[in-house]
Length: 496
Image (cartoon, rainbow, N blue to C red; front, side):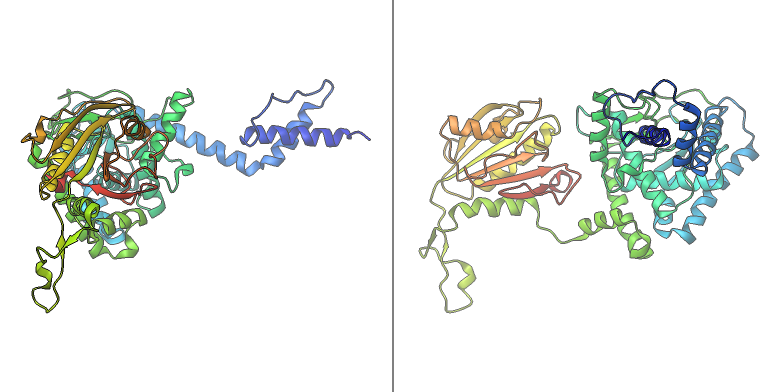
């Protein structure tokens, strides 16, 4: 027995709702048979959606459109009186005072940022370089007090998450800035700090993600042509390279240049020396730890607390871990010819390590674009120094991206300087090319040390071929472990 008219209308209404809510987008759009009472189907669909939900979404959309229109109509050419400027600055100061009582962790980090009024074109909203908070009074004039509080806390989290450090070479700057804003805005919304301006980016599907994971998702959307073109960051993002050079990006795809025209007292883009950049990074770390201790664990967002725990946890330097791994190659070879000093205080005679055996170590350098020559040379120089504790050694070294480049060999008696080695590469990333190269050339080292960003395209390697140590640099997840071998994290700032 076939469906009744009522049942057919109910089914069509449900299919329509599933399409609207995005729950069923597979297959062709259902057709409505001739003679169907379309009005009746629409009414049934409205009931399924719920009139209150429709009304709420409609009000929210209208409110957002109105607020966004207000921001777009900010008059950056308007003359602001001294009284207006003072009122706007007072609102920013008031936001920091309010945070001191409600959100002490954020307040203690906010008050270390010097307030700098900027009316130049490079900063139409707000920005931070880790030491100053730049704000455009024209933009802040249209914000509510709660929205100003949110923006101040937003700049604080850019410092906490070190978003001033440039992302890996080849990454889409606009997408990474957008990803960073998604994470920050979620953190602040969950914590309840102020009220996010309607132009802010917020998507709860990213809850529990980190900025790199959000970036990868946005990149996939862009590659498929599905990235919404209107996505834009709430503020201006300043990036500072290792030499202190400043780059300003507004998250809209274009970079803002220099000293735009604006009424006094406009400031040009910030300029920092390499030493100032490092000093700021150290100041932020120290301020984070102090703020967390003073605020108490309950007032620190969970993600930030994990970061602080990692910074304060006792850990061996990467050099010590690498050296221990090299020594493990001869750990089974001991001699009583040179007793170790550890036994001198007792009657026991302890054997020392036999260092006359030739140590065969291979180093492979991931040159897929994220590592600088300076970082790479610092690493191999350190390892070469470790090898010289042995009377005989062979150090074989090469670089790779999707294939192996520049194989070279250094031994204990060749008199060569490791700085002669040339770092080559710069394409994609294929870890397996290293194992393929070793097998094809009958290279079976006692120890393979890979210096990498920890982002393979595919497999990490062959776990059964040789002992492997992964030295991971510049990775956002300091707890990342390779699926086999041993893993240590390289901190260039500590090592340099």
